Image (cartoon, rainbow, N blue to C red; front, side, top):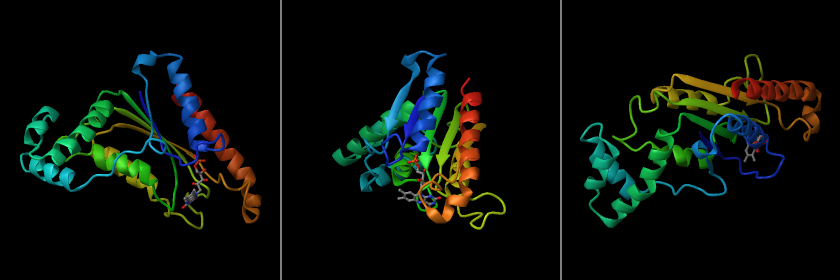
Length: 215
Ligand SMILES: Cc1cc2nc3c(=O)[nH]c(=O)nc-3n(C[C@H](O)[C@H](O)[C@H](O)COP(=O)(O)O)c2cc1C
């Protein structure tokens, strides 16, 4: 398993971190810890892509789909070699994982920059395309302060879930599951207090789904 967290909140308050921890611990009870890899994308951020990444990527993409070993040969400058040095281990890491577990908050109606930076770097043109993740199971656990389901006033404002669904589907993922804890801010914001029962139900359902999905 490759387990990614990206909440900027490292405290025990983080709902996405608590849920992914529970999922990972349950998974670890039945699997070897040698197969478990963890990345905290907020505490240990991925370097954003740069000109060298784009130039190497354009050269790679112009040649079609390539094995990662071939891309090393294409790097012409120290900056391009460095771009590839930063990228290849991340590609190898996710490609070798049978299960990708992601914990992610909703930030400003979208995904946290820390997760998007990982996606941008790992999705190297020519090397991470097509059905590259067709044998990978993906579980995404999201936490959002509000709720965005059918009939809610802000229905359709959650741009994270549809984005991640499109991204992983486009990369061949067939086994893709979302577990969502909504309304996590109801305990803090007075105007949302009346929604607390719905928040509690959403969190309870997320815990149940974690229990079910991880065993
Ligand atoms: C920078 C920032 C932006 C946020 N934007 C939204 C938002 O657009 N919609 C929403 O429902 N909640 C938003 N929230 C609330 C978080 O989604 C919520 O607190 C969630 O539980 C955070 O995940 P965590 O508990 O794993 O840290 C935002 C929180 C922060 C810190």
